[in-house]
Length: 585
Image (cartoon, rainbow, N blue to C red; front, side):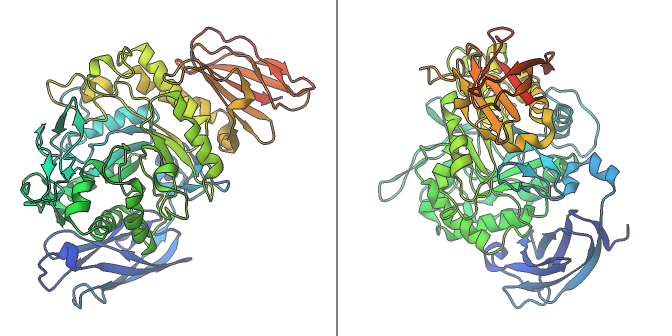
């Protein structure tokens, strides 16, 4: 291809150089291009990238001729009136097969419950929670040498490892503004006597891991929190070098076919932001910067990592900045917007009348089977219908002390903890999580590389529970994209509940197509297989047991529905957890 020829959905970067000096280009200058192409005419905003440099990142959404003209909020000749164009060409079928990201950005299916790429190819996300990817904890090597999984491995080695297991998504947090030193941060008291939660509370202390990268930290110091200017940065002064280092990792993930799920920041530093800086304007500016920077990558974006309802800032306080950015037309290419939730994004942020920005729902941070109903609620009550997934189900090694896991007594990396993980994933899928599932494990989600960490990145990466996500994919895709037509309804299988709310044993889940031609069922360990209701009248079904530990299917048996549309199920192969599929013969 020539210098003015790009592929459809390939990132194109436009560089604009300001002629004037500005005290703080991050706050004082806004740049954009008006982009025109086949069926497309929009304003695409850019971002400041250090010194006099501003960039606008765009993609062509269809083959053909594309052109752009720049503009800015300042009367700067270097930023206004620049122009250019290029030709967009389609990828070959071989190139599309090699990397699904080339198929275009994700969107909801026609029924609103599943995901597909822009070319209509269905997608089911299998992700991992590597929240600290932008930091030095996920080491970046410029070379492509393969290093063994262990202390010397880098991000590329981890991506290669998960790619072989079928993963296609990595969840990360763009910035940890107040995390600095692997040590103890003081509780901050403002002049009015109010308290600021300084960082994640772990084991009774305020422990804040070092989250810098090669470019430093995401914002500059000193900050403006009274008396603690060295703890909280100045969020009105961004550090482009930090995000330049992050760019390399996001680009690499896309090049390997992975969708990065990028959350703007973690909620623990937000009450300081809200209390000491202009809210919501300063946070709106940050979201605009971040979304503009990554809107031409194949990503899912998020305004906040809201993983705890104990945050002193309310979840709905984030609707104002997120809505404002979306109303402005950012991101410009209809990138899905989501949020790791404290329970449910629907309950945290509201429906579309409140959270205009929210186009992909999540549940998360509830570690037991009594949370899966939240996905069913989203399936039936999100208006308009939105895809949903479980962003943080049961973690293999959840919290301190790691050596006992969560709940207490479930030892990380064992068959028992893997069983709890499977309950979280299969139970969520059949409760309405048709967009995908995101895995997590101790060491991985914490970015743990310290010698004293109970489990480090290279330890938990190889646990069986992570490898078993490949079997979940085999189950989900066993009837092609028909899984996207499933309607969750646990009441179709009986028994399906015990009195035991805390835990991941003893329950069952079911989803069925409206045509009644496909049932998919999951039984936790300890739950017997009884019968199905709502089958086709006297229909014959071909039934297969599925082993979620090995990914193996049993030989089929034919089961006939009664005149009451019920099917008596055969006993499970054993009392462990099993999945079951019934297809109308």
